[in-house]
Length: 341
Image (cartoon, rainbow, N blue to C red):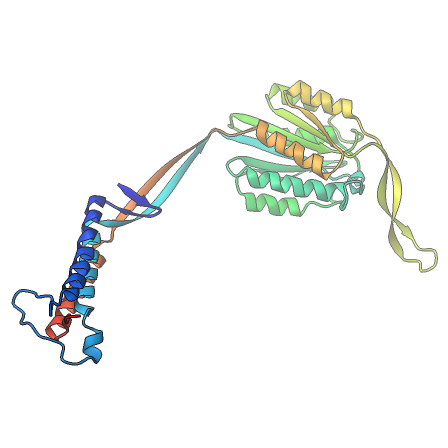
């Protein structure tokens, strides 16, 4: 079988017969060159074009129409078919929850040209777009934690929820334990072969009702791997702050410096205890590379079965062939002939 995208010929050997129309045209040309006055069809009288007008210019029309008719008839014999396909995707699946820190320290603008949260949202969005066969959820945390989207394959919905993430949607603070616990709750009923949490934070745990050690033990018991990403550096970082202008009395935003505490050892412990890995991103490029690394580490086993259905197209070809041959015979009967050169 010969396939051309969605078009194929069921009996492609008939395509060799396309040589016949070529031979018909070649024979007509040779006979004209040899001085033959016409290409005779049985039962039809010979006639000679008597003027160099329109008839002379159309003297090859019967042969051309006959050749085209034969060519289309050959295509009909080859049985052209139009196919439509359907794919069934089977995947062992990876269920992933991204736990994203939205605390005030994520306003730091050391990830130029935007703050840490906006850069993280962009990188997470790209990560989501590449995992079209996996279920991905989104949890945000600051002083408390909140589920923005349970694990889903609906990428569009997830991206809208990610775009809606903003500062001040939760009390300030960094509740790493609560963020982990809420993420684990989202994975509790998961039947996926692999369950993963990607924890993105820039601080140390200083809030929440569940401590990180307890949440880590729960993740280990549930066999959920946790990848931790510490974004930015600790110490003094550039931070936009709101101050009141002493001259106008208006509240304006100005760039200042804030002290940010980090706890890389805690994040390393969470990752190692659960079988994940710990990373540190100091700029937007390194954050993107980390997510690309996680994307490679957590791959789904995808099996695709393709089903194709074809419908026959030979009938329009047969009708076109009959019309061309009839037009050729009509032109011949009208007196159009090949005259000697």
